[in-house]
Amino acid sequence: MSTLTADPTATTRAATSPSTAEVNTTFAGILRGEWIKLLSLRSTWWALTCTAALMTLASVAYAMSLNTMAADPVMAPSMQQMHGAEIVASGFPFGMLVIAVLGALSITGEYATGMIRSTFAAVPTRLPVLAAKALALVVLAAAVALVSMTLSYLVTMAQLSQYDLVPALDDPGTWRVLGGAVYCLTAASLFSLGLGMLLRSTAATITVALTVLLLLPGTLSFITLDWVQTIVSYLPLPASSTLLTTGTTDVPGANLSTYTSLVVVAAYAVIPLVTAAVALRRRDA
Image (cartoon, rainbow, N blue to C red):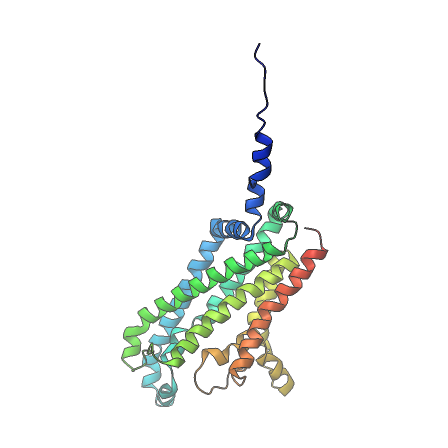
């Protein structure tokens, strides 16, 4: 009969070599896992495609409307104050809404399937998971925003050139508008991510996000009271107007300074994330 003998070096090797769990629970491993999960969802690719398509089509529609504006004696003078970058970025509100849905789905889907329990079991501290999700979402949102702006620039160039409105790449106004669109889109995605971590429901998160981002500015704009309009100015979509325009406009929020606009938009991303981080440490999965 053969006898089984233990390898005396096995215990030493097991103790000195890092385990798979230890490697995966480093921040790099957590980030890689969140990146894979995000890209493996069909909803992610649908959201990215819809964002690029809607933003591009909206800019094309705005560019094509220049023919009508030029033929109207009343509206034609206003074209002299237009900046081509504003037309290229005119699809921003549509992109913001779809990106907000993506931010919600990136976390609420895990709560719906129960996968979040496995994630938190592997990473008991939990906060690195939220940080990794936020970083992966920022990269993806910024990437699709850049692609969308590039497509919008290319497809509207021929139409804009007829009216000398092609945005110059060496113009600070161009980079302000396009950069502001990317900044605000990433903030919208983080806003929904924080809400999703707090509410843990896809329907509730999307409802609240779309209400704050779209419905409240549109509804409250009909109330002409000064204090109501002040509130409207500090909602995400109106507050982004300062970053997305180069001249004077009567759009609510456009009266904010650039610095104030940057801070307000950032607050809508940071406050839900910080609140979600606190809730993660105090609530069960």
